[in-house]
Length: 176
Image (cartoon, rainbow, N blue to C red):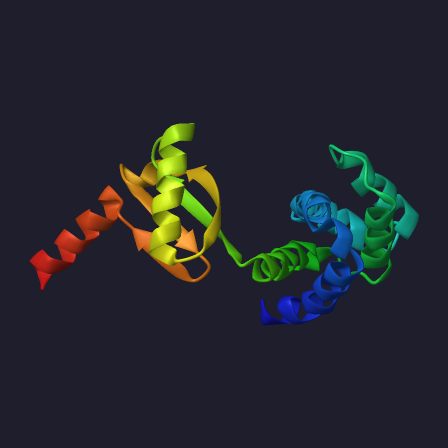
C-alpha cells in the first residue's frame, strides 16, 4: 500500500494545484473515477496488452454517470497512458486530504446499524465537531454487525459506542 501512496502523491498534488479554482467539482469527478477504477474486472481489461489506451479511456468514460470536464478527460488520459489506473483510489484519498487540510476540515464516517434521519445526523455532526475540535464532512454507512449504536472514524481516530464494542469489552473483562 505504501507503494501506491508514493505513486499517487504526485498526481494528487498536481491535480490539487491545477484545479485550485474548482476543488469541490474536481473532488466529485475524481471520486467517481476512483470508484470505477476499483473494479477488478476493469483493471484486468485495461491491463491487457491487447487493449489500447483509447479503448480503455472510452470504456471508463462510458461507465461514468456524469460527463468528465476537459481537465478530467486530460487527467484520465494521463493516468491510463502511465498505467496508473490502480492508483486512482489512493489519488482520490490524497486529493481529499489536501482539500481538507486547506479548509481545516476532516472526513468523518459514521457507521450505524440503522439509518440516521437528517435531524439526528445534524445533532450528531455538531456533537462530533465539538468532540474532534474541527469541522467535519460527515457521511453515514450502514453496518448491521454493530447491532446498535455507532462507530465514528475520523482519520486515524475511532470513537466506538456500538453494542458489539461494548460486548467485546465485557468479554475481555470477564475473561481477564
